Each structure stands twice: as structure tokens, then as C-alpha cells.
Image 1: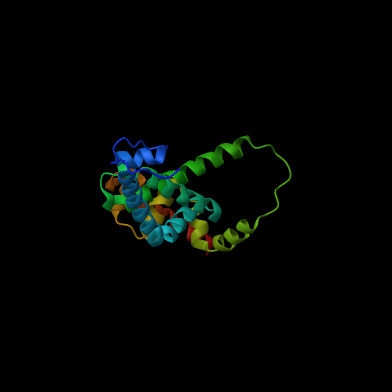
Image 2: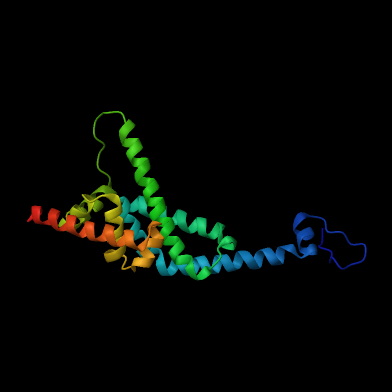
Length: 196
């Protein structure tokens, strides 16, 4: 059935799309969706790899890190209209990645606590790749640190964030960032001295 223009006298749209077009609602919705698509696509192109590296240092698994970052981008796209300051989108993404990484670690702890004891699983390809990465003494030492200290050090020295950005990403004060960073560096020195 051919589309009738909504301004035709007596013309009545015959399907949902025609009704929305006739009322002018689809054009507005498409413009908002397109803005979110463009903005999130640009953020994705510029920051995906660095966010995956950040997540990988926190969750210690490349595949899970990719999932964490993808989930953060999907959530940002879905809530783009609720974002008050689009200039802070990258900061929001970092905070989302840190929070989702924490959730992954909490979930792992629960699974490990209640997992049945049995034969060890065969190592996966990802485990082999992560094993290569973990051979570095610094990475091994980082894994021995408490979570907050490790997060502060990774965000400061790996992601090269300022204290203010770290405080926002971790949801703590700048003073707490300084404290976690100083304690983490002291503990890291002690652990590295044991390796040498």
C-alpha cells in the first residue's frame, strides 16, 4: 500500500512508522540516536584499546577485560541522553570500567569460594597469553598488592591519569588516592626486593 503524506486531507497513516513520521516523532528520535551513535563511536575509536589495557591490568584476563569495556560502552550508549556533561564521557567510561572490573573480581571470589574441588581445567589460549604477561616481576608484584593500592597504581602509572581523574574513577577523595598510591609504591618496592 503506498504511503500517503500526513498533510493530505483525510489521509490516515496505515502503520506505526507512518504514524510516527506523521507526528514528527521519528525524526527527533533518530537525531538523538544518531548523536549518541556518533559520540560513542568516536569515543570507542579513540579509547577502546587503552580501556581494555586498563581493565586487563585489573581483572588479569584479556577476554574478560574486553567484555567489561564493551559493556561500559553499551551502557554509555544506552544512557547517552542522561549524561549531563558529554565532555566527561571518557571519565565516566573509566569509572564504569573500574567499577565493572571490581564486580568481576567479586564474582570470581564467590565462584572460587563455592566451586567444587576437582581436576584442574586445561589452560586456555588466553591463560597462556596472560601467563606471558605475568612473567614480568612488576606485574607479579602488582598482583600481591591490595585491590585499592593496585587500582591506584595502575591508574596513575599505567593509564597516566591525574590524582583528580583517579579519585573520580575510583570514587574516593584525592587524599585517599595519595595514600593508596604511597602505600602501594612502598609495598611494591618491598615485593620487588624479594624477587631480586
